[in-house]
Amino acid sequence: KSLEKALDRSLKSLDTNYVDLYQIHFPNPTIDLKKTLRTMEKMIDMGKMKYIGLSNFNLNLIKRAQNALSKYEITSVQINYNIFHRKNQRGIIDYCEKNHIAVMAYFPLGHGKVTQPQYNKYFDHIRKTVGDVPNANIALAYLVSKHHNAFPIPRASNREHVMQNVKFSDLLLKDEEMKYLENRL
Ligand SMILES: NC(=O)c1ccc[n+]([C@@H]2O[C@H](COP(=O)([O-])OP(=O)(O)OC[C@H]3O[C@@H](n4cnc5c(N)ncnc54)[C@H](OP(=O)(O)O)[C@@H]3O)[C@@H](O)[C@H]2O)c1
Image (cartoon, protein in one colour):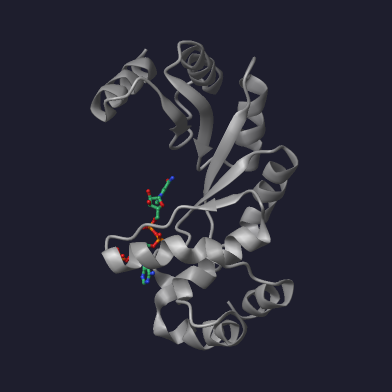
C-alpha cells in the first residue's frame, strides 16, 4: 500500500500520469520482495508506470527478483560502476547483458575522481588518438564502449560540465585504449 501511495505522490509532484521507469532504490530485507514486485506489476497494469528497475541489488537478489515476477521483466539494474570500481561488478553486467537488462552506472565519474589531476597522464595518452576531450568524457566513453548495455548517469551541477558531458556519446574507445586504462587505473 505504501508503494502505491508513494508512486501516486510522485506522479502528482511530476504532474504526469505515468513514469517510464520505477526503480527500487535499495533492497529492503524487512519487506517481502515478491509482494513489492507484484505490486509494481499491478501498477504497470494500471498504467502508472511502464518498466521495473532495481538499484543496489546483488546478483542473487537480481535473480530472485526476476523469479518473483509473474508477467513482466526487470528492465534495468542500477549499480556503482566506473573505471576505478569495476572488477567486482562484471558478474552483474555480464548477467544483465545475457538477459537483456540495461545497466545504469551510477558514480560513473567515480564521484568526480576521474577529473583529479594525478590521473591526467593516463587520459593524456588516450587524447593522443581521440583528440582534446576531457577526462570525464573518456571515462564515460569507456563504460559504453565496454558494454553495449551500460548507461552512465553522471551528475554535474556546473553548467559547463553538463555541456561537456552530453558530448561523451560522440566518442567510442578502441579495445587497446580500454586495455591501456584498465592496466593503469
Ligand atoms: N542508486 C543509488 O544508490 C545511487 C547512489 C549514489 C548516486 N546515484 C546517482 O548517481 C549519479 C551520479 O553520482 P555522483 O554525483 O555522486 O557521481 P559522479 O557523476 O561520478 O561525479 C559527479 C562529480 O563529478 C563532477 N563532474 C561532472 N562532470 C564533470 C566534468 N565534465 N569535468 C569535471 N568534473 C565533472 C561533478 O562536479 P560539478 O557538480 O561541479 O559539475 C561532481 O562533483 C547521481 O545523479 C545520483 O542520483 C545513485
